Length: 133
Image 1 (tube, helix red, strand yellow):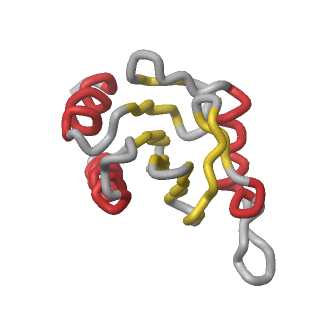
Image 2: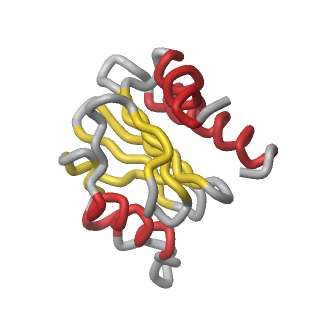
C-alpha cells in the first residue's frame, strides 16, 4: 500500500479523522498528506523537539506547557510520551504517533470522540511497527 493510500484509506476514510500526513521519523520529508493539510517545517520541528524532550523531574514535557502548532493552529497538549502526542483546540484535536520510521500527524473534527480518533491512529501505527516501519 502506498503512503498516500494509508492517509486516504486507513486514516481519513474511516471518518474518524478529517486530515492526515505522514512524515519520515526525522520530519525532513513528507511521504503523504491530505489535500490542504500543510504542516510547516517549523511545526514538524516542534513535533520532533517534543519527542526528544525527556521531561523534567516530574515527567512534564515543555510541549505540555507551551502547546503545539499544527497546520497554523495552536493545540493544548494533553498527552506527550515517547510514542504519542495528543492535543486539543476547543472540540477538535490532533493525534500524532511516532513509529520506527514514520510520524503520523492527524486531525479530527469536533464531531469525533477523541478516543475514537486516537484509536484509529494508534492501530495504524501498531500495524506499521509490526511490518518494520
